[in-house]
View 1 (cartoon, one colour):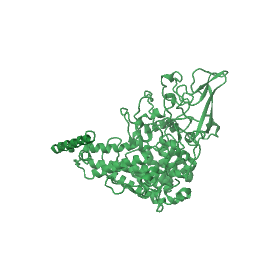
View 2: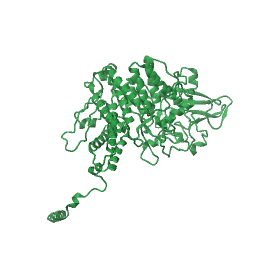
View 3: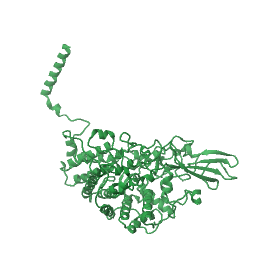
View 4: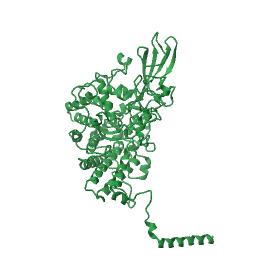
Length: 616
């Protein structure tokens, strides 16, 4: 033991002697990191820091599990969603997308706060105004991130400066919903001023993006869910909550809030900078309407003019999960995973071409449910018999026509038929573990280029965070709430004319219902439905029933013989049977606590000042 102590003592002496002779080693810089001072003294490094905050967008709406799987629009193939079964709690949050997960979002907010603090007095040359531009971007991103939390949880703690290790207290209470809205709007106003006239690379925040997000925030703020007197009448859970100011406005002029929402949307429209084919006075043809809709969601062929704030992907970046959206959601007969599957409720929401409702009780509709529908149906949904891409080599010989096969069919002769299971079903001969449960798959946001083999080639379709059509619909909704129905219908009909649909003429409650369906169809899979059914407080009806699916069979007509199956009404009589998915897969039901999502038990334990949302 003494020997060891002597050796340690000797080593310590030698170390101290060496340090005394050469103290410069204390000033060495790590080779794998950049110091904070270095970052904010260098324009390029500051730019890189700011750019990284945009990674809070993740894959946006192009995630494998589309957010609409937590609504009546879609079903997730690989596991039930606890929010759909009202099983969520502080210890079981269910599936929470990273773009609204508490800790992940606050980490990005902290980064934005750090950037804003350091850009207040830039240490690099700002004669060109680049620091002001970056400040504008960070104000926008902080507002965007806070809005992600607020529309999910209600009021949250507002932290506007970066915490440091010498902070005396890291606990902070939730701000009221009104305070959060005011803070978000203030950041967006600052962003709009700083970004005005600035030319930025694609994918970055702009003046228009800040103004458009403001319109969204104010529309939500004026809605039923956040007007506490209204919300209390519609929900006993909200009525019994001791801190309703965390959820919405407990007093004040609601008409004024609607007016602010309308004015904010109109300000974006008055920029005359965005918009795609919204100057029509009559519907286009069905074929043109379908292509117009495709152009918008692919952001090409002129449709990119509808985009205000988007996240872009390049095929060379292997980390972008959003670029794998087709592989993740294509039918299994194309070696896709069919992860997010449209429900029959969604499909039934598409109107007939003449603007009437689809009705299974109508014999003509029931016999041919996929004919003569809203052109957006054909642009958004892969259904039985839909023409799609050529099959991969293992499927091309079975389906040379490249048509979606969602049913069970007869082949051979009508007198002695054999059973053939469609290639896109769970009985597929190509892959059967990842087939659709509902009888449908997604087409929207899929690049239709036949040379793209989606199972192994990434696409370059951007994830749309905000687009001009949303602003227009926000404007129309605010107009309806203010009693300005003629103005509302004018703009709703402009949206419909572009896709080949006739004008709507209803008024009152019928107009509101028609608008709500129109918004869902137009904004499908764009992370709107989850929030819309809540803020309109129609969730008990919209989300309170089981997911519906369709079972399709094709029987050969007498005297017909078929060797290789192909969709044909000449050869086949098709039957369509709508039924509930069944409680074994996902037992959907609604509980009013799900109007606002719970704060994690871990966050509550870390911060004793947090108040949990009602019902948990």
